[in-house]
Image 1 (cartoon, rainbow, N blue to C red):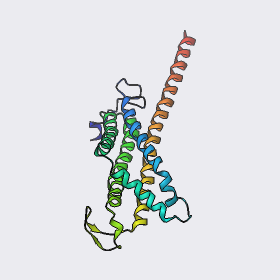
Image 2: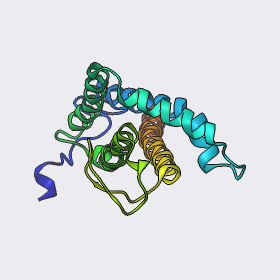
Image 3: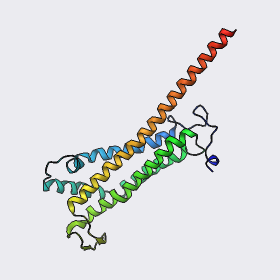
Image 4: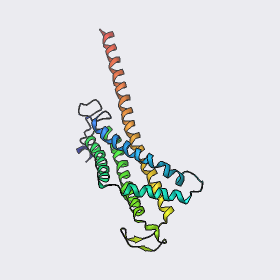
Length: 212
């Protein structure tokens, strides 16, 4: 079944090969770097919660909550732009995986899996966490039923909820870095293959000259 959608005859030297230098790669790397920039801007807030054992002051939680609430309550245009940028990444993957070569399946297929995982973390954890922050669901004790913009049972308190959100940011950053590593690996593999082909052509040319 795999032979139906994979073009095994296509190589990195083929004219219709969509490799690391194609516009589709730009559609992948651009959104990934954009979201890594957003996560890097949030790193000063995530660092005290995850990467240090120093006690966190209550004022820091207030600042973090204000920051998250400000981001979540941004104008709807911001959320739509983020969704468009996410879609551009998927468009780049689908373009590179249309009648793909073996290299596309290995590198771009694995990158797509990581990208889907990142989208799942963003939707299931980060967006949900930001909604919880805006709704203030930790206003009641854990185990009680909360009724408001978000209805359900309170599972985590304020500090734990913010730590989970920070951990989700870290997981998403690692996944996105994995996408960049795979795309860089594809570029490196193409460069090595091109160098080997050039060396082979030069050796073959020298052999023909000697035989003449």
